[in-house]
Amino acid sequence: MTTEPFLAPVTTPAERREWILRLLTGTQRVDRIRRLRESIILSLLFLSALISVATTIGIIYTLSIETFHFFQRVSLIDFLTDTQWTPLFTEKHFGIWPLLTATLLVSAIAMLVALPLGLLAAIGLSEYASPRLASIVKPILEILAGVPTVVYGYFALLFVTPLLKRFIPQLEVFNALSAGLVMGIMILPLVASLSEDAMRAVPQSLREGAYALGATKLEVVWRVVVPSSLSGIVAAFILAISRAIGETMIVAIAMGQVPRLTLNPLVAMETMTAYIVQVSLGDTPHGSLEYQTIFAVGTTLFLITMVLNLLSYRFLQRFREVYE
Amino acid sequence: MTVHEVLPIDREFTPRLALRKRLGTLFGILSALAIIIGLTTLGLLIADVVRDGWHVLSWDFLTSYPSRRPEQAGIRSALVGTFYILILVAIIAFPLGVAAAIYLEEFAPRNRLTAIIEVNISNLAAVPSIVYGLLGVGVFVRTFMLGRSLIAGALTLSLLVLPIIIIASREALRAVPPSIREAGLALGASHWQTVRHFVLPAALPGILTGTILALARAIGETAPLITIGALTYVAFTPKSLFDPFTVLPIQIFNWISRPQAAFHERAAGGIIVLLAVLLLFNGLAIFLRARLQRRIRF
Image (cartoon, rainbow over all chains, first blue to last red; front, side):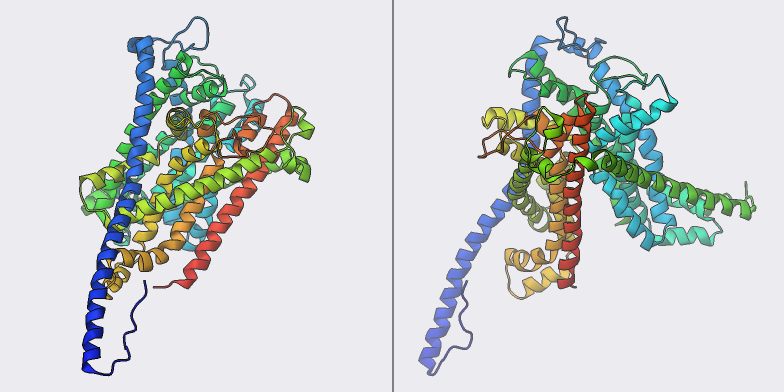
């Protein structure tokens, strides 16, 4: 857009009048074009924001169509009550429980690591470490969250499992224990980072008030800081569970592909995500029952994680409302 | 909160101050231990990978195609595929993500639709990546009939990282003080001009940092690409957007799942390259943030 020189070479009053008129009409024209241009830009921006909604609709649409086809051939009752999952065998069973149990077992192991360690790390960073130390340690800790999951799979299968086998000789090559432990370390920074954010949002005056009343460091942490930031911590915990349930590569590599209903963490099992990977690696024709099973499993996975994500969002909103 | 709730005065007051203080210190040591466990694991992981894979690293390893013979297998096709995916995802996801963030942060009215979009984005950011893979199969591979192609993979990963870019960009925009906007409007600039010429440049370091980290996430992803059927054995580099492809994480996964130890060493070598690329990205993000932030001060 070119702008008129503000001090035009004006000599006579007539010339001045003409110049002002030109300037005014010109401005009006520019104004109209500008307004049109900007309303187009605004709609483009709006459309970009709508892509996220379209993504969700796309996910729900894709999952539900194939899942619908699946349930025309397999009854929902079987899916929810059968205790075997053998869609790739001749004698087919479609009970989700072996996959679901494996998923929940490995997530539980991961949470036993990630939740206490993550919360402790958050307390350490927010309450004990000096701001300088925290600003150095936190980014290093967050590298853990940026390591690709396939690398953790390698680590679990070829480092942690052989290491654990020295102490637990009956441990199988593929097992839930080392997958769960490694997954826990992977999720630790997520818990630590989100919980620390929540703790930092607790006003300093609350801490000082407690100190003034004679509380020690530990009492301030456990009776003031943690309770005050509880909804943020809970949100972090729920999000961590959701992450564990949806985690794919660690379990696909280190936990095996044997769908069996057990709570023994020392043997091979197959999670929902690992099953999807297993089928995707084969060449399953579109429209076959095997192809549809991964969407039925995917729908189960999506529903579980969505409920957790929304729950976490609710908790997070609540904690934001309190201190803003 | 009353005093009695916060501190056990009156009823069970224990003046053993030394003990209480010591417990506090003990707890500090415990929390330091938690951090040390995390950092130690990171160190062990890197040491393990480097120990296993250091000796396979060579120019041949980078420039050879995968092979059935482990001593000849390289990562050329995977490296090229990762590079293409990176470029495509950046081209697709960056403008869309920033545009969505600008809309939500600067223009969106506070209504139901905006609230829905916001909840939706925060949910999408936490949807398991493999579900995006299923979306990719259903929409890009089948409905749009793109097949198991480079572009199908790039579109799938773009949708995956879009929420991350939006959230990071919104945070960067929110960090620009309102006075900047008011100054722009006071000078007669329109709402869009204010955003375009004042707010966006000021938020750019944060936006770029967030985008680079999102791209790092994209090149580390394996599961959604396996689901859309990126091939595990590709002995060529893609010539067009519609060619089959492979990427580094998939090549690594392929080598890990073979029984021979020689392939595991190749996998470790691939991991070192992948981690080096990611380190480069993180370094770039930190550098950009430091560099651009110095130019704009409030």
